[in-house]
Image (cartoon, rainbow, N blue to C red; front, side, top):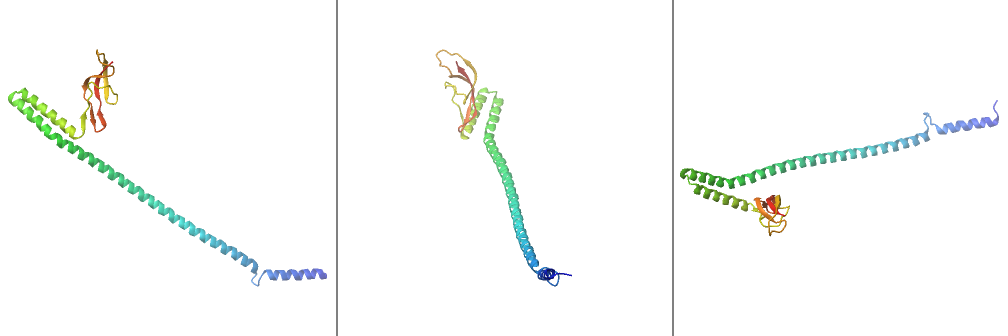
Amino acid sequence: MKTEKEKNTDKKTDVDIDEKYDENGSSPTGSSEGSETKATGRAKGKKKDKELEKLRKEVEFWKDKAQRTAAEFDNYRKRKEKETAESWKLATEDIVKKLLPIIDDFERSLEAANANDNYEALKQGVELIYQSLKRLLEAEGVHEMDAQGQEFNPEYHEALMQMEKDGTPENIVLDVHQKGYILGEKIIRPAKVVVSK
């Protein structure tokens, strides 16, 4: 037999249970809290999915852009290599065209010397060819260095030997064994010289 207090506690428990669960056996309060949590979780998941998709698209965009830029640079490099090769070819062709008349002069000089056994004609022909070559080089911006009697400068001169000469100060070019040449401001070949000591 239950006391009055126990009966009241049982009734209260029944009421509490009835309030917590509906007729289907699911908790109405728990259900709404749970569904809100699930809905919030789903919304957050969808938002993250959208952000992830956006980031994937952005990665694809930059990857595509990088590949296109690399391809453009590769095409640019190939085009520049081709242009450089073509420029060298044209420059070589231009110099060869300028040298051909000088070769013709050599042939005429040799023919004249052989026909007459005239070495004076050969000498004059060689002199003319030498002058033609000098003019060609000057037209291309190449000039001989004036080294004889100048103070020795290691940037312009290559000392083959040193020797004493009376009345000549130290480090003066006494003799030029091979001429030096300058193209514009650039030394193409230093002069090979004998220097005083």
